[in-house]
Structure formats: C-alpha cells, structure tokens
Amino acid sequence: MREIQSSIRDVAVLQEATEMILSSVDLDTVLHHILLIVRNYFDISNCAVLLVDAAANELYVRAQNGYDPDKSTYARIKIGEQGVTGWVAQHKSPLYVPDVSREERYLKVDPKIRSELALPLIVRDSVIGVLDIESSKVDYFSDDMIGLLALFASQAAVALENTRLHSTERRRMRQIEIIHLIARATTASSDLDQLLSTLADLLSDTFEGSEVGIVLRGPDGALELRAHSGTRNDWPADYSASAKNGILAQAFDARMNVLVNDVGSRPEWPSALSGSGSELCVPLISFAETLGALLVIHPEANFFTVDDRSIAQAATDVSANAIRNVQLSDELRRVSNTDSLTGVYNQRYFHIALGLETGRARRYRGTFSVVLLDIGGLRHINSIAGFDVGDVLLRGIATILKQQLRGVDVICRYSGDQFALVLPETKSQQALSVADKLRHQIESHPSAHLNGEPFVHAASAIVNYPEESDNEMELVRTLLSRLAESKNQSSSAGV
Image (tube, rainbow, N blue to C red):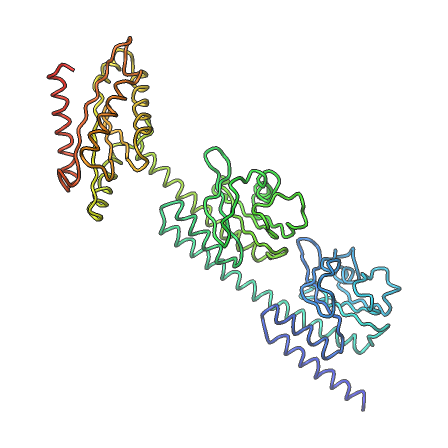
C-alpha cells in the first residue's frame, strides 16, 4: 500500500512539474521552472541545464542553481571529450555516477559534490542539451528517483524545444518586419547618406543595446564609416587593422556573417570598436561585389546568439541591394549632370540649380546672382593648335573656377566655350567683382597664350535675383542678352 501511495505521489509530482514547464514558451521562464522543480520537488540544490552549441560541438551552461557563476571551467564543455555531461550528449544516454571521486570523466567544479546524475534532453532523436544534477551525498539517487527524473527530463526537453520553435517563429517575424522596414526606407530615400543613417537606426532598434556601424569602400578601396547608431560617437576613422586581421577580414574572406563572442579573451585582436566584448560582422555583397560591411558590437561577451546572426544576415542581404541601387542612381545622376571634359556641372544641371536657388531665395526672401563667362578665342585655338590644347584650356578654366569660388557656388559648363555660375547670397556689385577677377585669371592662364601672345578674351554678363527678375526663365533670357551685348562691345573695341 505504501508503494502504491508513493507511486501516486510521484505521478502527481511529475504531472504538476510537467504542467509548470509547459505553461510558457519563454526560454528563461522554462529554465527557471526546471531548476525550481529539481530543487523543491527533489530536494536537490545543485542543478544545471546545458544546451548544445552545434556549430562549436559544445555544451554551454544556459541556467544553473547552486554553483559559483564565475566558474568558467564549467561554462563550455566539448561534446564527447569532456566531463560526464559531454559523454551523455554524445551517447544520448543517461549516466549516474554514485561516487564522483572514482570517475575520471568528472569535472570538479564544487568540492562538496559526491554524486552526479546527467540526463540527456532529447527531441526527435536529437540531443538539445543535458540536465545535470549533483548531490553532496555519495550514492544519493535511488532507482525510483532516477526513473522519475528521467521522465521529467523528457518533458523538459519538449518544453525547451517549444521555446526554440517559438523563438524561431519570432525570429522569422522579426526578419520579415525588418526587411519590410528596410524596403520602405529604400523606396522613400534616394540619398545614400540618408539611406545609410536610416538603416543604421533600424538595425540599432533590432539589436537593442548594441552599437551599429556601416562601413563602405571608398573610391580608393579603403573602408570608411558612413553611418552609425547607438550611444557612442567614438568610432574610429581607420579600419585597416580589422580589415587585415580582424572581424572584417574574416567576414570578407567567408563572404558571410562572422561572430566573435570572446573579444576580451583575444589580446591581439584588432577590435572594430574599442571596448567591444562581442562583434558581429556581415559583409554587404550585391551582385558578387563587396560594397562594405555591417558591424554590430556589444560590450558584453557572448552576447549575440545564432538567431542574431540569422537576422543580421537577412537584413544585410536586403540592405546591400538597396545601397547598391542608390549608388547606381547617384552615379547615373552624377554622369547625367556632369560635363565629362571639365568635371564641373553641365547645362542640364544649371537649369536645375537655378530653379532650386530661385525657390530657396523666394522662400527665405534672399538674393543670388548668375554670371555667364564666354571664352573668346577658344575656336581659333582649336583650329590653330588643335583640340587637345583647347581641352587643356577648358580644364584649366574649370580649375580656376573651383579654386576661386565658394563651396556653395555652382559651376556649370553652359556650352562649348561658356561657363555659368550660380552665386547664392551674392548681390550685383559683388558678382561684378567676382566676374572681373575670374576674367583676369582666365586670360592670364598659360593655355590662353600662343607663342607668348594672349589669344583669349573672356566676356561676362551678370543678372541678379530679385533685382532684375524673380522668374528663372526671364533671368536666363536677360543673361544671354547681356552677354551678347558684352561680346559686341568687345568686337567693336577690337578686342
């Protein structure tokens, strides 16, 4: 009768324990319940749940009770090579050690421990972890207790698998959400810097508490930080060390995400950001071209998970194509707006810039001037000395204009021998002084002389907004009319 009552009690305990661990799909909650049940129902204070890291072929302590948390020797165990738990994970079989002093495989963590019971956590014939239970008494575990704990371990494995499936589903939802947000950001942005800043912010929200940086290759191939998000503003300017021996080098070589979760234990490691404990890097690859990389950094070691790697990879795949599309769009826009010979803007962009400046000045009640320079004598130089000499002159004039004008001024090659300048916040008298100075420098350029004699004369015309007109087309008509008058006057004067 006593045995029957004991069996009934055991079944009731097992049922209650099972209901408790199956009541949640949160991993930390399930682990807490497992440890609580082992301690309260079985009166065992030393218990640990070790999960499998398949990539490293290791067991790692995910939750424990009764041990010193600083015992790093117990943190990672090679499957099949270390400890009782390593043996259990490899052989998928429970192992009871009644006296640990006589077991060579035992890893001494707590000197008070005298017996150990390791139970595999198996789901569909795959080991997902080990439930390790220890006692301070020799041969503490009876056959009945071992049988009950084995049943409990099988239910614990199911509960842990449920949390994994739930986590997988949440990860998929996060992937879909971030991909959707990135797609929206791509559609809404045609500016590369704005896109990169938006991407960095989105990824920073995804990896809370982490620093996110996006590095891209410049024209010279060197990596430069183009956007970052997080709490730190001390990102380095040079990434050559990491690109040679650090995480950037590994990611570029692997052409996929790379995780280094133990930066602090690598004294010679060239960290992408100082003070990092974990570094996750994913190369930005579009159509087989490596554009740069995404860096996600956290100060704590072992911070990033397999799920984080998967999410970062999915986000980066979408981001790489988005970045490349904007780069191609920028390049197309640059080519269509740039004069190929001189490198300054062309007539098409002149009309765009004039419209933008007109709108800005109208909105803020500002002013601006437009200068049109005509290079007289260029056609004669082309016919006498050749087009190569004429091209040298045009490039020299473009260089003069770039050197003498401000960064906010817009320089355009309006036609073969004419340059148009848009000068924001410049009044007529100021523009006249600028035009006179530029004409003098152009006429003094070495390429403007043949056989030591000056061969080029620069004529100019000026209009001002809103002094002459507040309409951009009217400004252009006035400008061309005044230039024609200026050239006629020069011809009449015999210049």
